[in-house]
Image (cartoon, rainbow, N blue to C red):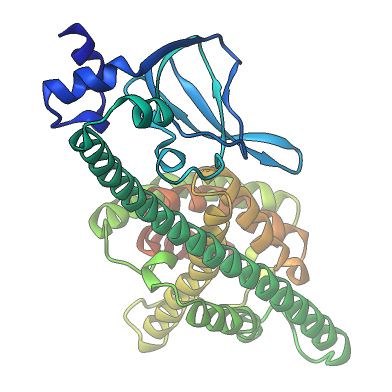
Length: 374
């Protein structure tokens, strides 16, 4: 009975009668392998069937730079059944990862000493079932691996398009801005109209990239998920940022710099006037468009480039990238865009929505403009 139990631990002998198990056990050899010792070599001939009674083995394949591990096999695993059936060369090298005891069933011994055809029939049947199940499992694994490779290729193509589009867009914007500011001397690049023109130069290629990417728009922050949390935290963040903006404006004023020098806007005397309502609406749209570019597209794409793990890196790099686009407006505007980008990037990372960051951009930007115009 003890001998039968040794074989019953393996799925290969599942359902076999006690008589069959006793016959097979008589032809089974116990062999001990030390750690690192080779059990079988890839390409070698043999018709033995192996079963791991204790310890663990590694499956190795030969490559250009030596052997590499495919998988690991532990107690209760059997292998070598294909060569047992058709006498084909071994497809891999098996090596002991730890000290191991292996049961070896030799086909030659069975053919010479076992006259009962029912024993061989049961053994071959179980090998066929096991080989079929293993093939099905490998097919499933291969399909999963192939799907993962396709996803990685899609991701690579997406990131390649993103960085190419980014470099092309920035190059066009900086060149056109430089030409306009130097050739057309009558145009003030700090006018609100030019700011919109400048924004559209970046926004249109970015929208085209998003449409061509085939990605859903929610990946770029255009989603209502977590909208309540994003809205409330946007308001709270704005309220907390008011004293910070006030302090920055005071310090900037000491150095003779005002936001009013960079952006022209009407002096607000009546918030109910149609002119000021339309101006506020345009400012909100302007804020949304900026956040869509900086956070929705730049930060989200960089977040994917860092495998969705390095959120702080995506924030830093996207803030620097968007700040560099403001070089035509001067060093101070670059600094303000960069520093504010860190805080807005953190808020966007929390929600994945443009609602909160747009509110902060609109309210704090508007507050800074009011201070500058007062």
